[in-house]
Length: 233
Image 1 (cartoon, rainbow, N blue to C red):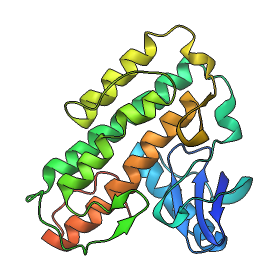
Image 2 (image 1 turned 180 degrees about the horizontal axis):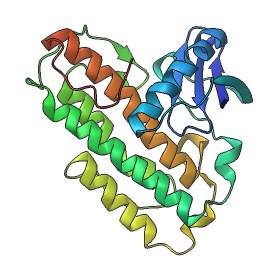
Image 3 (image 1 turned 135 degrees about the horizontal axis):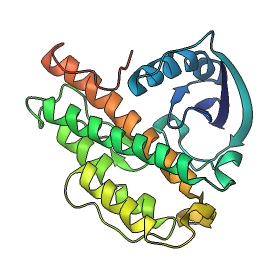
């Protein structure tokens, strides 16, 4: 099984995305470090989806993007070549269901943490401000990108309610627009290119980044009774 990777980097700092496993990603101080992590990431991702790994996993880089962004802190603006293509109704429904499942599992993980304002993590700052440390901070940060991502493709929505509710509401508003499956490429904020395919990928990717951080923080802070809903390794 081939993993078609998109490599985004700033100098040596690298982000690797699995183009054909939407939302799966790795990070590393070099391309090789990020690439070496990818087979394990995809195996974890497939387990989360309830699918088995069939055969060996082989990585191949199909696209490269040099960036001036802070890749080490997961700042990203890449648009995959595949994300410029129209999307069928069947594929949209499959990816939408995965984005909703991701939100549901994120909410489930958050709700399982006994003290949502307690954390063992030190204070650290990134390009977007202080890194979320507690479960409540991680949850709010992840939920609050809802209107930002949808807004980049011309869908007006909000981030009220739970992460599941606001994401479902955003998809409903998207689907009320004619020809949304055309997958138009928009030039959004900061001259970044966006499409519906990219929004679907970004939701799952962004959930995985912060779910992994939340899960690891919670295990370190409270012990090993935290449910591993995303099957992180």
